[in-house]
Image 1 (cartoon, one colour):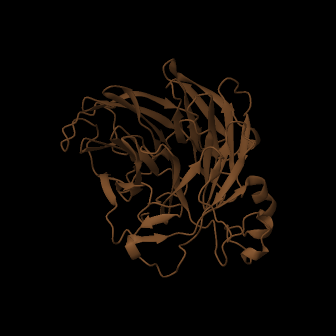
Image 2: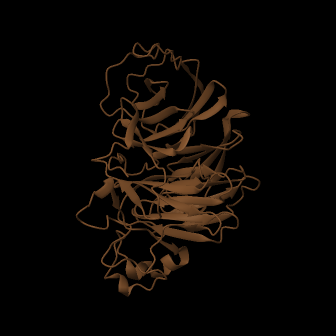
Image 3: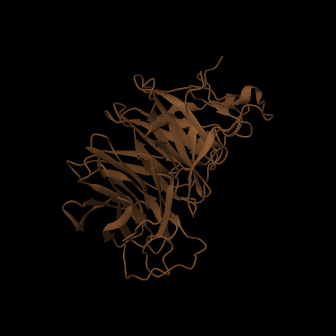
Length: 424
């Protein structure tokens, strides 16, 4: 656990990712830095954390010239997108960077004095920051295209999608697409043939860059949903999901895009606390879809038939008000896992709009009672990441929050989340 998890933007909450070279290492943003934390198992089922004031478990992976609003990693290369809040005086064109010596053959002869979008790349201890887009870059990705070639896709509020390539110490432009609406997030299919893009509208765009970047298929979602905020492809490439800020996620089958095959709803639709912020499919053989609400709750959906839908409620605070740092560790109260239907049935009577409990736990009619005198679902979430322990092969879920990083195991066989509170 670390207390440095950064929440700079009220909507953009995809700020943790696993290290592809060591899945037990989790990356997270902290101001201008990307930090690395070892999430290796701490011996038992209880949620644990090392005291950040007494233990140097977090290390700085890299530092940019701006605070990342989104970042990703692949093969040790970290890319970040964001905004230059205090615009510095720079040359009107991007040529060779005097600080790094890297060539940035990108949009030459175009005036960029007014560009505020930032793109950062860290590779082999070399950090490059450059202007990309006139407004904030809401999301960034990185995909390996060949042995020495990587591509990043940036979604900018200026309505443009920017594709950049990195290789041989050089960043070049692949293509730019104007989709006529501010863009929030994109995800690429496993075969790299399809790109799903979410925007500040109920539209979801599908592009096929290998065929053409001039044509985009538009999925006009029903009911005029609020802006799309996150997207993810299933490892099979058959399904993808797009989630919207007003608390609905649509799952599509690429073989039939006429309508979604499933819809996932927030436990607190049309409220800020229940806004969907980040969605991700698990990799490997874990047929699971995870979606975070703005605060305190995570949806876990079994994608084999979409009938098993659980909601994880996270605790607001640690077990003891006075933290005992014996052995450099302290314990956190454990999450509660409930069926989605049970959550909906009791939501209106047991919870206020901000997700806090009314009364005490003895008044709740839930299958698993909450620990006494404790509140749940108040912490703001900063993203999530599924990963497998490289030694044991067991699946785990890491969740970022304004209180730090939390990890717990996922029992893939029984589709249960551990640990959960067990009444003595």
